[in-house]
Every structure is written in C-alpha cells, then in structure tokens.
Image (cartoon, rainbow, N blue to C red):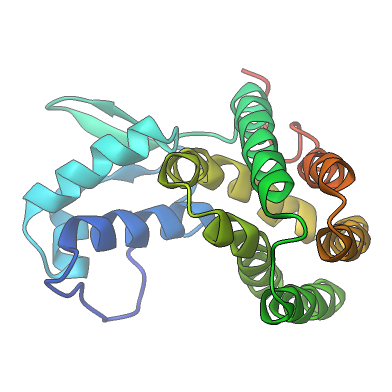
Length: 219
C-alpha cells in the first residue's frame, strides 16, 4: 500500500475526525486507488496514532461507500461504482437545492462576494488543469449557502455522501468544468435577487451535470 510522503501527523484535537478526513482525502484524490487494501498498522504509523482511530475511521469510510471492510480480515478501497455515484449525486443535489431555497435573498454581500471569488478561482483552476484547486474552490462555493442555513442534519447528510461524488468529480473536472462555472454564476445571481425556486432548480442542475458513469464501473 503506498503511503503518502508527507510527514505531518494528526494532532490530538478532534483525533477521530482528523484521521477520517486524512484517509478520506487520500481515497478521493486517488492516492489510495480503487482495489487498494488499507492496512491499519501502516496508516497508524503514517498518521502517528494508534490503530483504534484508524479502525473507527474505517467504519465511517464504509458508511460513506469509500471502503469495504471484512472484520478481522481486510479493508479495501471501493471502485467508483456508477450506481453509487448516481445515488449519492441525487441526494447531494437535493440537499443543496434545499439549502439555497432557504437562504435565497438572505445572504449578505460578503457571502455573495465570497461565492463569486470562489467561482473565479474555480474557473481559473479548471482552465489551468489544476483539478485539486478546482475541487477546493467548488467545495468553498457550495459550502457558503449550507453554512448560512446552519442545518446540522442537512450538513451531516452532505458530509456522508459528498466523498463518493467528489471521486467522480475529480475525473470530470480534469476534462471539463466550464458548464459548472456558468451555472455557478447563474446560481449566485439568483441567490442575490432572492429567486428561491429558480435558485433551487439551478443548484439541483449543477450536480446533475455530473454523469454517474464518469470514471465508474457499472457493477
């Protein structure tokens, strides 16, 4: 199993969440490839933790559909499965549509400007072929309405299913992200004018620009 070369260790604060996030991100960015067997001992050494938070992270990763665990035997990174992507995408789309419907017309100028800036960075990253930067900017843009709504249940659902979608988006943004950039601009202006229903429709459509089959196996 290839271990990332960075040496940064996980701090003691929020240990469980930090371990989960580091392993999740390594799966999403392809460091740990589909079919890769994850070994808790090697991961524990990489992150500077005991095996207990690694095993706890495996449970959360399995719940998100990123790994398959056989207790006492092995934990393996899942393939990018078309049905799993489609299901996760539809849930994510519905949650973001709900969020923007609720906050349309309520976001301040600072939030709207942050969304515009994030979209400028997203578009520039797509044009430069910097997929990681595009994903970061995309996360930031869509996270602003979600944070403004402050609905912990909705945010929890997004957190659970977002990694499955992000794996497919990484492949999609390496080829095309211009459609998303245009829809982002449309969404921001609808949020600014308070057109809740149209904003919700555009938010839903943004996530459905992602074909479920992008880089996926139809298992």
